[in-house]
Length: 185
Image (cartoon, rainbow, N blue to C red):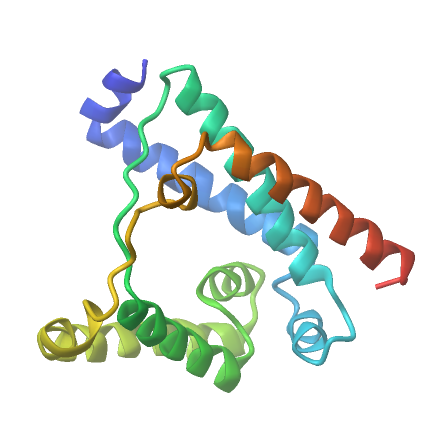
């Protein structure tokens, strides 16, 4: 089934469109496209964004490794580096600090009609992408490869079965959910 999908570009585009709409719907339903909720997260007064993101991490890591175990998917993780992580974090953080949206929440907010997300976010993403593309060769030579990580995934780095990382991390995430709910956050 997945081989047929992989070979069919039109089906991939249609699936991507449907999944993108579903992603935006769930972001909006979860409240993370709301500027006030995002600012509340940055001020540590509203933990909706953390809850939504950790829910995605929890479902995603379990789902991907279950599918991998059944031979339905293959991981295509890329090796990272300290340099690329710092550059990416600075770009992401600058956009987030200026506008109060991340790329995913910009798309969801545009979909619900937020003009600040359309003109500030969407145009900012296009402008930032252009600037990054222009300076990419210099970044690649001097910064992006600095401090290459020893492995592509945490389980590979620790040389353990992935479930030895997934299970404790899942327990930690669930405990954090419990603490946040207990504190009324």
